[in-house]
Every structure is written in structure tokens, then in C-alpha cells.
Length: 326
Image (cartoon, rainbow, N blue to C red; front, side):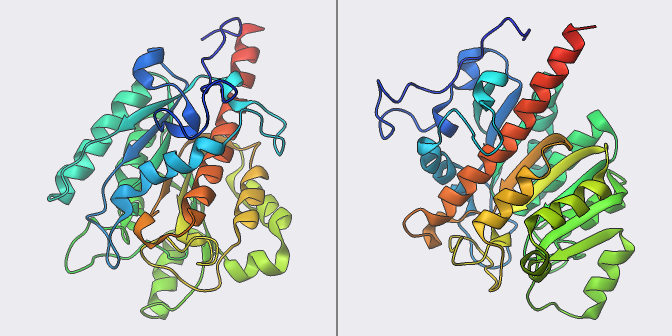
């Protein structure tokens, strides 16, 4: 798309009420309606890798429903993301719910296809198992990437019941496979009990830095965002967000809730503080609507995906303008 082409945006809410019509993300067009896109919002309805409460397979559609109220202009970033770049809903990646290894391969192949068109991905989970195949695919395009991981949990454990691919192991596998830039890895929102002190020791050996939820509370979102920007630098960045980084007061609809988490305001402000980073793709996982009420969790998730999409749209537009000026 050149700067002279106008992206197709959301359905006009002055003509079609927000509660009417298909529930695509932010009421955007489907990918098959626009042919190609700069950012593909895709769902992965998969939760066979969870270790406690299931239900995240329904998360993507819950986020889409909650996103009906999103509007085209983002004042926090002074940008109209859907006018700056083509954003489209790519539907769901259909994966085998009975075979985790096959599901991981399917997600990787689908991500390869979408990234191969030049699009960036905003993936809606699903459980955190899907981060591994998404990172594999992104690394094929960009090389080892910086990772910013928002979560209550480390997700760098080795196995559960002997299984190597679960929602608690994706980032250990990613480090072992060499697809992460180990000089720029950070967890944000970590809290709660662990199996033992060795969990932290192993995590540190992999290269991760930790910003706990208490750190965010004491230091504030701006200072934390500044620290993260310095660690990331200009590296290609992948952001993976487990909605349980938020306190259960802000995200009750998730599989492994932990007390003492971030507020939704803190999460959004940290993300806005990362707008200058080179965000190449992102995922948002572990929304389990069966445990939600009043759409609290899916609303927080839809706004989080909106901020991530805005960051990517701004960067795409800036790069396009720079290239066309040469």
C-alpha cells in the first residue's frame, strides 16, 4: 500500500449500531475483503496446553465482541491506527485440540504464510503455548528478537508431566532454540509463589530480567517503560501478553489468576511508553471468558490489543513515508 491509498477501516457506527453485524476485531474488514493487510489480527482458539482452568480457546472471540466499542482515533497515541495502515481480521487459525505438537506446527505454518505477505501479526489466544510457534515464525523473518513478556508467571519452566510444549514452557523452548535475543529479554508483572528459588535462578541464566508487579507499583509506569526501552534498544521486538499480568480485579477471566497484579491503566501506560520500539508482532493470550463477568477481562484485552495495533500502525506509516521520500 502506498501513501496515496486509503485503508479500509471499521464499519461506520453512525450507520450500523455497534452491537450489530459481524464481530470482527474493532469491526474491521475481514482479510478476504481487503486482499492484503499490513496488520493481521488472528485468533488461535487453543487451550490444550493449560495446567489449571481451561477456556482460553474462547478468548479470541470474546475479545472481538468486547472490541466493538473501540473507536478509530486513539488520543493516547494521537493516531488513527486504521487510517495509517490496513488492519484486517484474519479469522482463526484452526488447530488440533487433541495434539499439542501438531497444533504448534499448524500455528507456525499459518504465521509463516501471513508474515510472508509482509503483514505483522496481532494474535489473540488461546493459551500461552502458542507464543512459541509465533516466535519461531517471527525469528525466521527478523532473526532472534527481543522479547517483552507481560505475565504473572515466568513461563520458563522445563516440562509439565513430561510435556515440553505447554503454556508454562514456551520461553524456555524459545531460548533453547536460539530464536530470542538473550541480551534483551524482560518479564513484567511477575508475582506470586514459585516452585522454588531455582525457578528464578534458571530464568536469570536464560537472560531474562524481571520487573515485578510490585516494582511497577513503586516505580510507576513511566520509569518502567523507560527501563524497558533502554533494554530493548532498536532491536526487532515481540511483545507477548498474558492477561493474567493484570490483577484479578481487572482480569478475573483467566486460567491461573494471582493476587497483586498490574492495573489495566498501568499496562496500557507501559505499552504507550514503548511506542518508539520496533514492534514487529505481538500476541495477547489466556483470556478465559467463562470466568469473566461484565466483560471486564475481554474489555481490558481489547484495549490492550488496540494499543499494540496502534504502535505497529504508526511505525508502518512512518516507514512507508520514509521509503517513498527516498
